[in-house]
Image 1 (cartoon, rainbow, N blue to C red):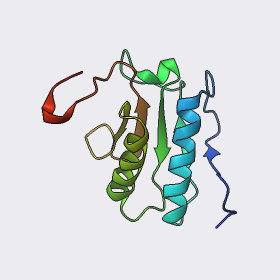
Image 2: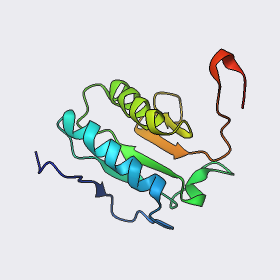
Image 3: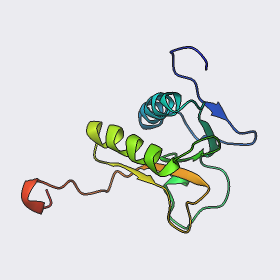
Image 4: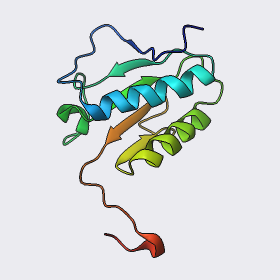
Length: 122
């Protein structure tokens, strides 16, 4: 495995509209979790490619991550979700539904409603 610092690979052809704080923090957390699982993470899509209408990919707020080499990608997705949402509840981490079986999708949703204790929306 590589050094202790953050290391993230990018698939050829991936296009970024910007490298914002949300992506930087995401890369840091993903890099740590993947490294703990013996894999260097690779971003496979940012604002490029085809995504659903209204996708946060087109706003520079969603990224897809390769799962090659991960024995339990659902566990890795859960670990990433726990760490990112521990910092900011606006992160969503998706893996395992019909549209996300071959990659982990991570987005920062500025419109996501925070939930107070007791289930009330802020």
